[in-house]
Each structure stands twice: as C-alpha cells, then as structure tokens.
Length: 66
Image 1 (cartoon, one colour):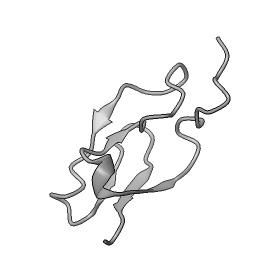
Image 2 (cartoon, one colour; image 1 turned 120 degrees about the vertical axis):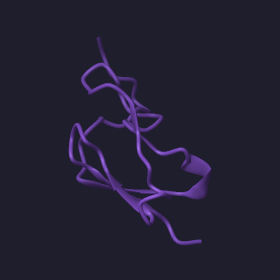
Image 3 (cartoon, rainbow, N blue to C red; image 1 turned 180 degrees about the vertical axis):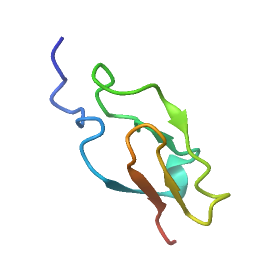
C-alpha cells in the first residue's frame, strides 16, 4: 500500500499545533497516512489547558492561541 503524495506521515513529529478548526483534536490527525499508525484517539486538549499528549505515540498537541 502506497502513501498518497498529499498525506503526512503519521506519528512523525513529537509536537503538533492545532487550531480551533481542528477540534475535536485526535491523533493521528486528518490528512495523515493511517496504514502504519495506531488507532485514532481523541485528545482532551481544551480540558487540559490547551495541551494534550497522545497515549499511544507520545506526541504533544498544542492548541494555537487565537
């Protein structure tokens, strides 16, 4: 199975910034290749003060300031 040229590699970064438009936040994010990733998990980014850590891959998701 090949990745589409416009898909990002899943679980490739340790930190991601998300906007209000991306909520509810989840890992992996939309646009990431899913074939080599963990199951989608929703992250309680707003409830945790604007930052949440994925329990599977450890990536930190940070809510961009408006």
